[in-house]
Image 1 (tube, rainbow, N blue to C red):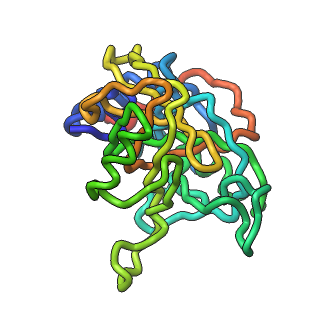
Image 2: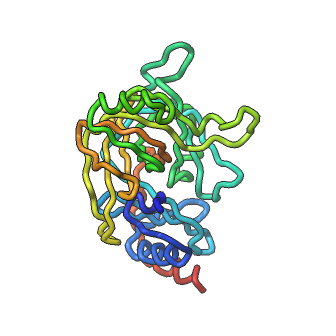
Length: 271
């Protein structure tokens, strides 16, 4: 079964798998100190990344995946968002893509929400602010079309919502039911042209996943896909359409230098 972790080559099926992954990551991770404790950051050569949460009692208490890719975009971040159900280290940012395209009382091409694996490093900054971010779209469902004609033909037979070849719908901002009052989520429906496609191998686990660079409306996104979701291998020039979770990192803040001795964090958390 595909998951956010398997989308970047970390096959996790149960709690023991999660602990084993945390242990492996901690041995290689770079610690970043924050007021509430530490983030432990690991980036695999494939681009797969893990952010562990370590509290002030030096216990591992959470984990978030990310993918570090080349697709950087300019957005206008309006505000941060920490929901009641979020882990203390987790949160999201509400932003507008392509803020230079302000028109019709909008602050950009379209709004969206992205979850930030290093949320606390940026949550207390002053917003609104125009910044650069790198957003990774983790596929929940995805279809691949070799041509625009194939995309258009599939659309005609009623396969899901009608979407232009390059479109972005911030589905997580709209409740499924008009009566719902649920919190917004970092999910989107995306269609676009594949600029680049590579099957990559997570060097920590030896497992493969797909990285796609997708040109959609007003922006280019990195996307990662568990191979089990694909019936057709994507290639540059193909079109894709799917449902995605969005993980984003603000690019204008330098990381703190690594420190040593952090294997004790995991050992203490286990005792």
